Amino acid sequence: MCKPDRRAFGMTSSRLEVRAVACLFIDDYDINVEAARAAGMQAHLFEDNERTFAPIEAHLSGAFARKSP
Image (cartoon, rainbow, N blue to C red):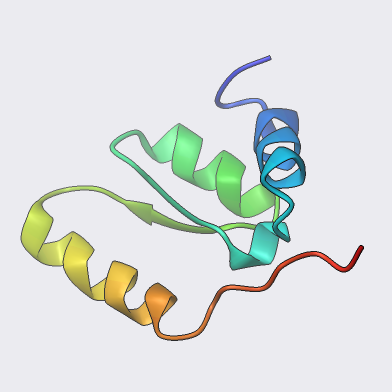
């Protein structure tokens, strides 16, 4: 299983023990970004560093949420 199969994103968040909504996925392929969003993740299409820093900073300001045991 691999990108852009949305199950790959669910498996990744599960293995990391993080809710999908707490994940920020960044990729330079729109199909992968859309698949991550469909799986419940926040996602950003990478175009250049300047436009990517703001979404990362916003995410790090409070988006982390561990799964309940």
